[in-house]
Amino acid sequence: MDFYSGRYRKAELFIRKTGEENGEFSLKKNGQQVVTTEVTSDTFHKATIELCENTEYQMDWMNSLISQMYLCGNEDIEETGIKHLVVNNEWPERAEVFDTPWREQFHFTPYVNWSNDPNGLCWFRGKYHLYYQANPHEQKWDNMYWGHAVSKDLVHWNYLPYALDPQSEILESDNLVGGAFSGSAVVLPDGLRIFFTRDLEERGKAETIQQSQSTAFSRDGLAFSEEQTILPAYAVEGIDMNFRDPKVFRNGENWYMLLASNYFGKGSILLFSSKDMFDWKFIGPLLQEENPEIPSLECPDFFPLGDDAWILLASVMGMRTEYGVYQPVMYYIGEWKNEKFTVNRRESCDFGCNFYAPQTLEHEGRRIMLAWICDWEGEQVTTRHGAYGGFTLPRELSVREGRLYQRPIEEVYRLQRELLLWQNGGKAVSVEVPGNSYYSCIEFCGKTEFEISLFDDGKDYLKIIGNNSMVELISSKNKDPQARFVAETEELKKLEIFMDRRTVELYLNDGEKAGTKIFMNPNRNGRITFRFAEETKVTHISVHRMEAIWTK
Ligand code: FRU
Image (cartoon, rainbow, N blue to C red; front, side, top):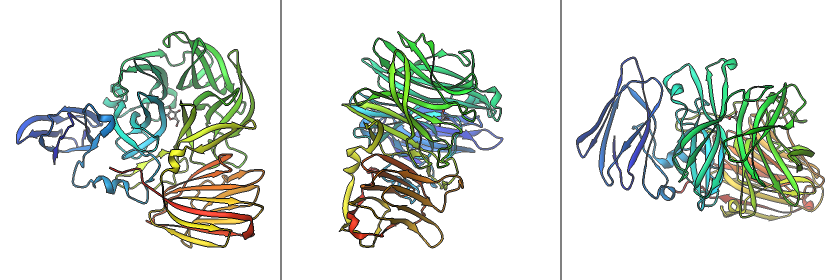
């Protein structure tokens, strides 16, 4: 394979041998050998190669497999992003990687392979940084790396090199699994400090799990060093192996850390405090769930919102909502005084079943949340060069009448392109949408039952049914018979639909309720069909095509 370095000064690739024999890797510069090496490991290892700018390279590899390779190392990498290479002839060009029915067009996804939780979400030196749980090698969860991307608007992203790797002992052994688990970032005057969990376990043996908390520092947000353990596994009496996902924030004189855990048999979020971010004192549980079926509350986030409310977000393992949705994200709204949190209201954040591990950031007065589009029921179809797991639209949070509201940030609305339908009133109508990425808005002025079809091929369907006080999303591909995707409201005034190939997000009444659902639609085009029982109770309906964010 040949490539041209252009302005990039480094290449990073993940390689392993494929059989008993060692593999071989070689790189030539203008025909002259610069690297030859044996590939000895059965597990993927990262190789970093220094390159000369504007140079032709020829690369060969035998009896080995490369999961990903990209060019990086240029000074303005945040502007250019890394350049993924087509590592063998089986790899399609960038446009073909992105433009498939299985890839969201205006939701961020990893370039290929697996991602889960957003991590270290922050505004740092003029850009939004998103790190995320990632397996660069396959479309399934395995040893965890931190993927990394950067954006000026939280909508268009540039991929950056993977920021954290699993521990080397894990990479050396097929029997061990774990890596750099979820965590958060704190922006400091001289750089970025991250807090995250190091997980180490023997494959398939839950009793061997060791979860400890680490911190690392970076001047530029790209390369992290000075990693050190700040809390070892089982650091607190009464916890089990669940001890992860540090969320660190400052309040007054103190730094605080929240951790997902189980404390004396109850799923809990633990609170720690520190003066210097290294020496942490256990204060006690910030919140506990009484239900014994909840082993832990993952990925906590905690922040002030509105005049005097504090919001705690938690991804509740093992729980089912009143509509049977498994592992919901709950928000708890209340007061935070003298290191005690008093909850006034507890509600599920999203009425779909593909929303997990949200994280927030605060910038210029906006509190913005991104979550992982999870798939507990295994509805996703894995395709070659596919991305399994992406991220929801960034949602701006606010409090109204003691409840959490979530709306897509205004930058998302700027992706609207051609108007495909504008209709006053609710006459039945159907529109084909080339590309199946669109935004639709329906405004109501009274009570009516309705049905909106987002897919129907006679066998499978995805539809929204509703009336003035409830909306239900129904998918024939839903694999969880216990779960229904229902949002209740006092009066439905507005319904917004963000359909993006395999993901749909619904918003009611400017963010009173939000729901995320995946649906595998193999077609290139979408079709939306509206039917209202009382046509006069609909003010208008619109459908706009949405522009893809994958522009280069
Ligand atoms: C949530 C989670 C976290 C953990 C990470 C590992 O999805 O289980 O608790 O840190 O994923 O990838």
